[in-house]
Length: 447
Image (tube, rainbow, N blue to C red; front, top):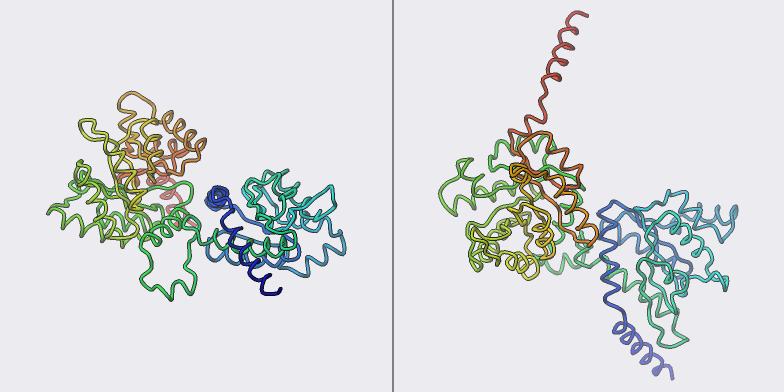
């Protein structure tokens, strides 16, 4: 009889795993990635086994996924004081209020039933979720049975299927652990290697490292950044030390202007030198051909030089060849190579490049303005499209001609502006600042 139970239990575990909705798990991954990118916090709540899972999950989301996570269940003194003074039903909601829960944050529920106001079950979870809704925080859950209140209001909720009435609780709480470990180890969320995986595979998987570096870099450069258009090591070092550039972009024209000659060997040498200098900030380098197979082969070769290299692919060829979009898609999806889709002049081109999977989409803002249009309008249209369609591509505006362009274009919705060393100097130095500083120095001598 006991052996039959063991067999049945293990059979149920396999059945649950097969029935879990992969699409909902992927949706949760994307929402958690968005929360992290927006610098949001994640608060785990649960009771009983869910409380224990919350404590463990906080560690993993903080350490492995780089998400700022907390749970009220870690602080026994505060928890028991709130229960004693305020009551069990409000202990979680009052803790969330004290933590200044806001619209950038998320609340993650581990519960067997998900809470039920009608049946007076886990009402402390219900009250916490009502408050989360009120402040427009995201709600996540891994729950059992029908999901209860959590499943009804969550932005993303994974329901552990019921296989037998007498194993609902152990199966649900076990799969809560399975699912959160899946989440933190997912390539879109994982930032840090776990100990035994790192020990057992010293070489690591290069694509996984590239994914992790990409996520780390995006967190470092934040929502707005300035990249320098240059291959001049001296200029890059100068502005890197100031802390005002967070990436470098090059192309064949920039390389030639900076005196880089000697063919592919010289390109490789200068590229590796820049990549090492700015690591882990991104460096964009451009292929030197417009033939489909050659572009793919060059991109694969260039990306091997350093993990922080992105490959520039022009949106189409000099005669309107459209295979470039296919190249962008293949590089991103098949080879896991980050692409900076470049030489675009309007929002619709960038939108298509984003749909094809490009990590960065670059408009040549100065050239757009030269044609008599206002690049700001294109930036606003593009940013609206990317946000509405939840596309992750970052908007780069290049070909910057005037100092005022930088702030105007960032304010319009661009993520990154590329500028030449001379333009950065113009941004820094102002004649009235010079005059004012000189006045201070002259007056200081008279004191």
